[in-house]
Length: 470
Image (tube, rainbow, N blue to C red; front, side, top):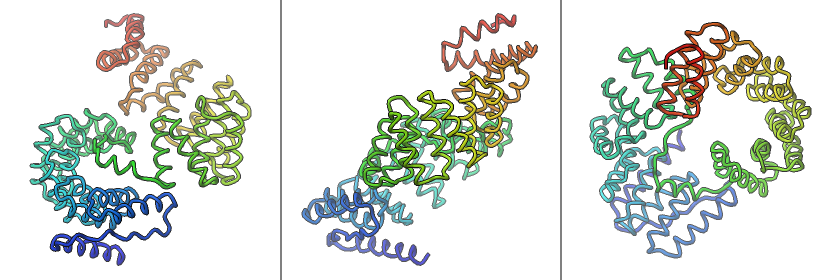
């Protein structure tokens, strides 16, 4: 706490000096101890450029960007202050200064800096939202509301703007307006977890709690997802990030986007410098299951290296198993994934992988058992729920499939139409033709509204077989 207070005092002192003095601040000195070699090199290069060009605001601003990219916000503040003195009409340095001040726990100076930046470029939406966010955190709701109104008028479908304005309305206890704005934010970006949560909370406040369970489920399902801000300037900062932690984070994000070629390249770069990095080894093992990502020899080498570093890490064996399965070596894959389960019996992913393998080996009873274990460990594991239901239907256990499928309707996503069709089949097989027709009708409405159109003929054929009008 003392160190944080000292940093805050130092920043405020620097700001005061910057505001009152006409002298251009010096190029900041930056302690490099403990930083990755790549990061040290990037900072040293940028600093040498700033020192060599003492009248060049771009050089000082670039140094600030490199420092900000590596979360060194205090010296970044000083570099941006220097850039502003050298280029007082440059919006970019004032915007970056505001962001670095906010990250340095200096909200009032950050608000002043972002307000100054907007005098130069009042139409930069991310900066308008950042100012509104700072006003919101200071409880200045009317000012925040007033700043967001014109922005929303320019772009009525901006999910980030709708969400922030919804928070303002909620804070002002205008719950009807907040509910409408949260709903619009969810429509603009259907995977916006925080907006779904806000919609659930606001609805409960005004007695619209009938859909709260569904909205909470959507919030949980998409809790790590949010819409892009469209902040081109901040993206330029991210591109400067280097060092092992940044490369690992980038690779993880690329994996989430299923850009396996790019993720694999980054992980392999990490291993060149840090050959025993466990994250890189384990995630390359995971990627090895996909086409053209690793030869059998490469997958084996990754497994041997990962196991030597983390012999009790379940993911090592689980992803080795998925790599073996992709090679058609099912028996060896079973053994590897079973080892992962031995180390962590309640791992839903490992249980689901083993179930999938058993299903491929025509061992449905065992596959069903392991899918059930996966759901017992994590009831919200949607893929396992759908695979279990499909297998139960295929094995003639339609009555058992119904309670497996019904919880899946709590989440509204691209799988929902398939869930409704499976439920229709399960009810029809169980003799309840009216319920079967009802779910097919709901599925038909969804397909007509949002697709996929190729399911329409199948749904309508099912309705005709049930004797139900379209």
